[in-house]
Image (tube, helix red, strand yellow):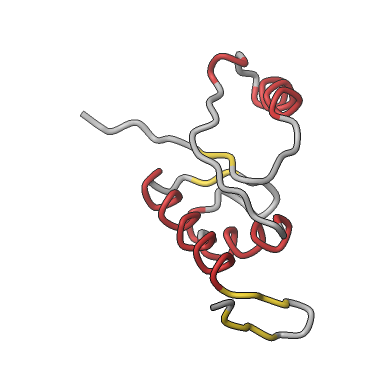
Length: 102
């Protein structure tokens, strides 16, 4: 028996209800079929999203969508690692400087 394939939509959002409606319409799903499984809070969410997508690039369905088919534990571990790095280090991406916050 083949295991089911799950797809995960990754990215930032400021309004969950709006995102749920948008995803349901875009993918032809019921809002009840869409679950928010995990989240982290990051100050520079745009920068963090770019790094996360780079980390998980081999699992990305295509470069134009935020859909990934990585195992959930790989996604969660990647998000936790990214969060830990960005909390413990001050990353100034426009100056290419990484400083230890400790």
